[in-house]
Image (tube, rainbow, N blue to C red; front, side, top):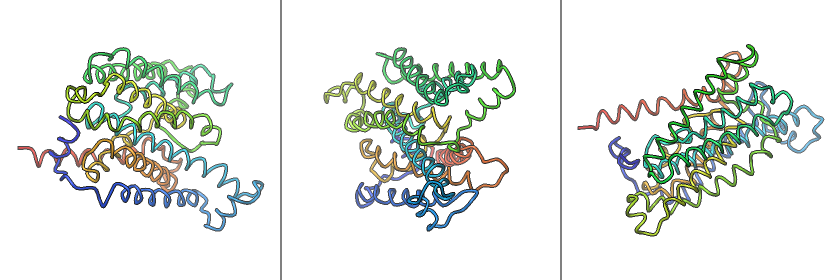
Length: 346
């Protein structure tokens, strides 16, 4: 069942775009800017707008400047970059596989990045080199995606999904093995904490390290739009229109590996954003895959930045982990989808 048919079965009516895609993008961008401002204000210590402005332009020796420039601003920038990456990659993979449940984890990228980071923690490399976790995470994501593509090459979409599932399961098994054989309680705790996902310790160094990969990966994903439009008609029809499916698969997988691998390597595993964002956008763009990409990226940024703000404001002792909150946020969406399916199925 395709993404479009599942949305129709779920009771979502086909709409014309709200005025235009530009109006939709402008509305989401306005929400994103508002959340960006709130992100600089909110935290354990609330700042006034005047203090934020002073912190942005004053000497870094002042406390407000340290809070805004060194803590909250890189955290907000990284949340936007990671959320946009997850939203766009989810939209591309759902269009590529014509599977409404497709996300980066389906093709092994998330587990590969997580495994790379776990290796850095397990062998103590992260204690020697501060950038070891993101570097190892990126290497793990690229290795996992290469293995997925090698196993699924030439077998069509189903073969690709099966290969990704196998790689994802294998990566999860190795992570569980590392936890089982962790040399001490501290190492096991650090691994579990990282796997839950967080933006709490984000820094400008993290952004400098991963942003080139995120931008490069998203650029590859962004140019797949027209090919995804043709693919929505079916693989045979797309090939008859001149679409090189092997090239499309390679661009989508390479872009996902670069962008999501880099994002996961600094934030840990953050789920559901790549699943939910395209579903929220799809009814407003007449279900055309090429029109979904940019709004899905901005919607992913809105969702992740909003979730990060919420984790700072919920008082539960230690700060709630971002991956935990996004899972709690995303699960009701799928409960709703199941209930809609039950009510509309014959």
